[in-house]
Image 1: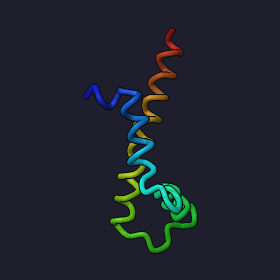
Image 2: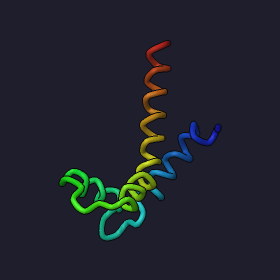
Image 3: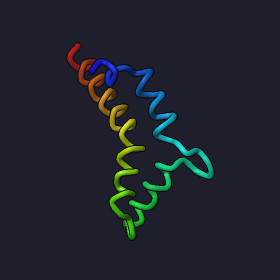
Length: 74
């Protein structure tokens, strides 16, 4: 489980899986816009796609929160 606490790996995942495919716009941006617009017509595969491309960002947010908590304890 060390890999989910590795900053370099999490950032690499965010820049690759999180943003792929890159053109015409990063895939996660299109999905977030779709959800913000009401998610009309989204199917199960679209939600899975959001989870797949969004998971690296969840790991990054988790690391930032853990880092903040550890800084507050010092």
